[in-house]
Image (cartoon, rainbow, N blue to C red):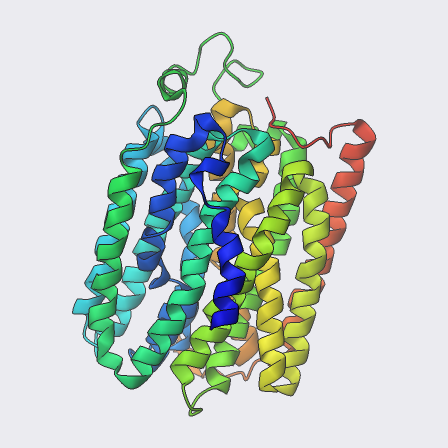
Length: 459
């Protein structure tokens, strides 16, 4: 414990507002409070936590389990809706309202029965909660673009993500053992974390966005002389952006392939771990450690390194480097699942943390290397929507390939059961990760040849 504290103190020193540029400090202070409180509530909706709760307390089936892990992914399909909703409105006001709604859903889990309809209600609550979180991510992207300069944005916002990830990593280490001792404590933990998060919402709601008056005017009047328009003179939409921005379109293609590998692999790994720990001592604690605390803890430690890379590299070059860790992680998943040895599972989980540390930053900031400032929310919305599309099937694909399905009837015809391919699912995800890496490599080489691979904001 002492060694752990010694490691975290130098990291916490980087959060000091005095270390930030003078103009960004007011917003930084407000957002730092939110980053240190709201994640306590969000942690209770994370797959590594609520996924374990769903199996050990609510006895949710495999389909519901996959839906819980898929929720933060397919919820992103709503991002274009949130982008339109926030257009011309206060970005802080919209984001604070969404945070409040999420925390109310977190608190409501305490009221659910652990049998009967409770399992379905839990899955539904998680899905709706993650839809609201998708809105927060969409709108917050514009706030970050306005408040923090490009040369420091990944490092500054990385501190928010780092602090939130630290909470998401450490808090399950307390939740798991408590639920192993008394499962009914979930009725206390869920509303308690929502109450803690409310402190952060109050702080966030008082934050100001630099240049927001002008930005809201530009958003409300898309036909101003300097507005980015389609060749036909109409405002851009998701389809037109993908049609005219060829580089961003291919970036989304390879991101889609990589995301399928990651989503399918992560969900299958989580289910394998929970099944492997069934009947083992401290199964809640170990399950949350492997699926939440360990990967998120290492994500926190690796994030500053990734942030420095992202600040100086174009996102396509960054994805080439990051994609290598994806391939290694999925390969380790295969080896760990094939042998089923617990230490190998811990190694694979830790490697996933290193991958996640770099992915969390790039996913939220990478589109800025393509988007005009007035189209940031739209580009992020496109990215999130495509994330949602792959999230609608990839986690279920990973679960089915791992565990198969029981026999059932469909339209009066019997469908036989299938046992899945077990560890072979990770051979599939490793192959997909390699294909994505080749795509990013080719795209970055093309941009380098054209002299367009500088790490600057587009537009």
